[in-house]
Amino acid sequence: MTNEDSGNYVLAADVRSDGQVELREAYPTGGLGLHGINGGTTGPDGLFGQGCVAISNVTNMLAAVNPGSGTVSLFSISPSDPSNLTLVGQPVRSGGQWPTSVTFNKAGDAVCVLNGGEVNGVSCFSVEQNSGLMPLADTTRYLSINQTTPAAGPTNTVSQILFSSDSSKLLVAYSGTTSAAPGYLGYYDVGVNGTLSTKFSAIAPAAGGALPFSITPMPGQEVYVVADPALGLEVFDLTGANRSSAVGISGQGATCWSTYSPSTRSYLLIDAQGRIFEATIDAATLQSTVVGNYSTQFIGDGLIDSDVMTINGTDYMFTLAAGITSLKVFALPGPGRLQSIQQFNITAAVEPVGIVVSSSMQGMVTYAKQEQ
Image (cartoon, rainbow, N blue to C red; front, side, top):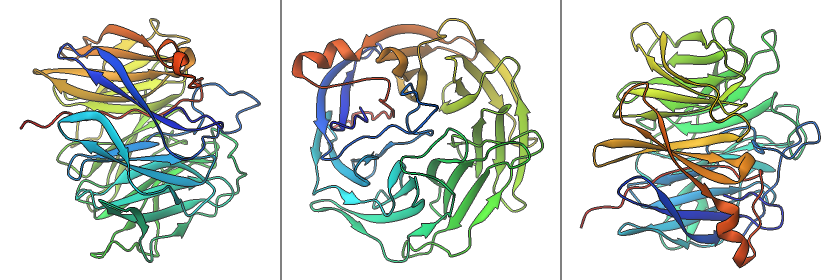
């Protein structure tokens, strides 16, 4: 999404069979974007987190936050033509002041949003196919972080919200300030009717960790890989004892964003300098092995949010290069073999129709067309 204070848009691109993209359409969300305060700059990472757009493959819906309006928008996705989006209902109040991240539950019939800013916390909504988002009772919970609207960051900010794989927990990542005042990966328990527990369980990172940023689930496990700009990554196991580990990545310069490649079974982490690190995780020991270090090719491009799609047996990673207002496509033919195959200039594509894009843009999600 563009995240511009003059008007927020969701940009939809078609993906070819070779993984390359072509921008199809820009859809107004009905709300406004708003960049966070980062030392007076308006560079990449305007929301200090991950997940400002989310989709449900079950109900064929897309949700996007409007940080400048304090609202959330819902779109329906055409299953046979996924770049065709339709706004459903009107944007709804997010339950806070500066919404930054959003997530669907497993059934796709509920959406929860994470708010930063002065009034920060979570709120949830039911997904109504024809009328849009409706507030869910007993789901607004405040985190009481001392912040401004918009938030000043990237430290001391909420970073991502995500339902656990079985939707029994609602996860929240919060970036602390230092190793002496670290952040956490925390969660609320989700009741059968969608309500949230009043108790919030906050799990501090293992020694060395400080700034939990993104949340990427390990398939088939209640294990989550969390990028941490303080050292590299953390791994949290939420089955039973709530174990965690902190793993340093040599040469990283503030790893913030993460995604998973199912074909290579590896995690891709991106730091604030544009470096990409590829790692495998041992679920038993929670330890990581770096299998790919792509540390020089993309410096300065402002790489941030990514998502992976499998096409004809090959994984492709789609990465927003906000610093150069472009979308980069990488092929992942095997572990440690990331290949850059396309750099798509978003500015050139949208300028002719008068849509503003800048390094404030954020978010990335993929959707595979359903077979008829």
